[in-house]
Image (tube, rainbow, N blue to C red; front, side):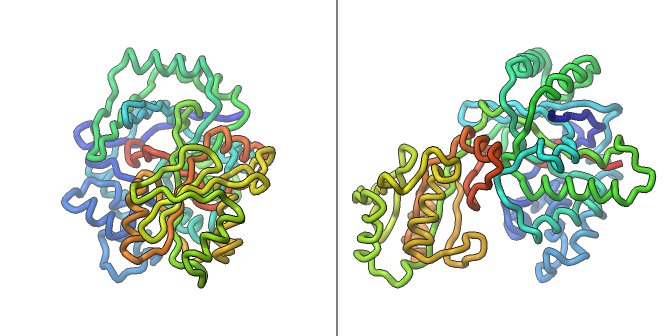
Length: 415
């Protein structure tokens, strides 16, 4: 059963919350982070992407980068930009986007739950990315950024959280330039905390929605610490890591689309002919065409949009992986026609989250940078949970969650 632990959070003062809060480290590159943090010394980006405070020619994995993270983290605490709460609390972090609000319960997840499979994942992680975040956790001795988890909705939990937010003002409440609202509450009532922890313990599994590398890094560092501690008891703070838990019925997964640089030596007509063996191909004109249902794709090629309807036999709706549109596209088009064998390593393919819109696909093809673009119908939470429960792994770049969590509203120290 899932564990949820209250903790003594490290948080910014109300007057600085919006300035400290930043986008996650992995959704922007170093140049974008420099621009975003320019003129804002309070931004958590100075800790989670500390290369922005060093010369541009410094490798982002150089030891000096991690040391700068530690230096900045200490400085934030000394200056009072991050201060420790006076008790072990739970928190609520809500986000409002396009008129919809999702309410996350913020607490610590258990390293044991990750190791024994109570926390379930749906993506593979890369060792180099794991090690980068492990170094960051080690040197700061803290989880600077929360991971994004989901759990099967529990009516009683929803009711308690709903009652709390309706009767208590948030301590942080701001809207970012992208229009997303961020609202944050502190739950100090120990009886209420115990009730929430007990209810959570009845949940069989939780699911990594976003942040597989951060989750792995946090759990692995916690495990390292226990192995290196001859006096390990099991109740140390390093046995837990920072997570925001959202009920599955409040989350939305948006499309995650593909761009390819070439047609593998094929002409347009040859490529369309091969596609016709797998799909019913229909030209849709020059106006952006978005797929409307599972097993229907849209494609942009040489100034025209096409719909691609997968033919029977190209997918297996009884198989959690075989039913995925990313599987159909990867097997029959990216591999079968375009000879892209490994989506993780090929330099012929790129991925674009649907938050950027299909106009981004059109722009990059029209520029000549890419030859063809494919837009997919989004994966559902039900599909994600089915895959995780069956022990399967989704193909790379399958899910894109919006809105993204802001980092810096609360930090978890490991001692």
